[in-house]
Length: 383
Image 1 (cartoon, rainbow, N blue to C red):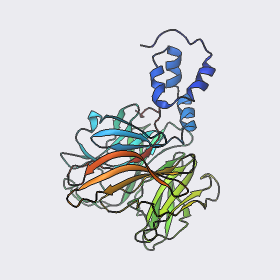
Image 2: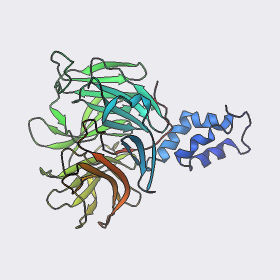
Image 3: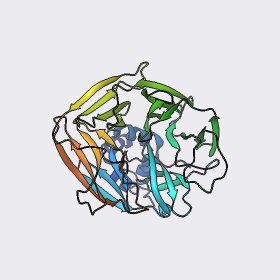
């Protein structure tokens, strides 16, 4: 129970102090007094605080425990996996929005897919029931209507193909669905076929309530950034990619400074790494500018095997690349993967910031080893 006493300092001073305190410590103040408790539950404070810490990204990894990794401070914390995920064999996809994670999970017993929204910091989970079923071929978006930020929506893109959902009978047409937390229901917004496809390795990025993916046309090789606006519930092509992708190249998408996109490209031949950024996404015309160009003999190959996760990354305040790295051990009798977060400076200096452990590729129920970029927040999981 919170104390009935009030703070000796004015609440506006307390609020300014709270904006400067790491989120991990804020919840400890809830029981100090009712006034502080109310402030930390206030949506206005929660979202203003979140906007101020958007550049304080972490990585989250789900293994036998939940790891939150802060590569800038070279810190790592671990906590038990929520009991709601106990029967989950894999969390194979995540989309981050405002400290909330949209997770596509595989049920360990039935092998069917499930969908959950999770705030790891608050340890709250909400399962989202499907309109019909979920597929391992689904792509998801997570965002909100800009008229009201806390009214979140989920986008599901189903391409009509089923892989291992043997319990599902019949054939299905491609469709697009939206789940609205306000109505707690799905609806079909478009049942026509799309003439473009999302690149499977691409992790979608939610920025200012809208979704962005790397995509390509179905009948030609052009690659571009596709977006979905949750306010108008429409798709829009944002811009083409600023380079040509080779077969061995690695490309990854991320957000940049809260209102732009960044794009990492590594040549599979030279190992050179480029990072491109857009101007603000709400500008009338969005284009790319090369931000970093890193060449060094020490650069790691960021994606070496189809069994390993596609890299996630972000750019820190000093313009270093913080990137999730997975690498098979050199021992041929060992199927373990070494997992770490590397810091690549703009001068090409590579340093392992955090060693996140190992994962056994031989395990049928091995967790998805990928680290997702994540910003802890006080945003409650929508009811």
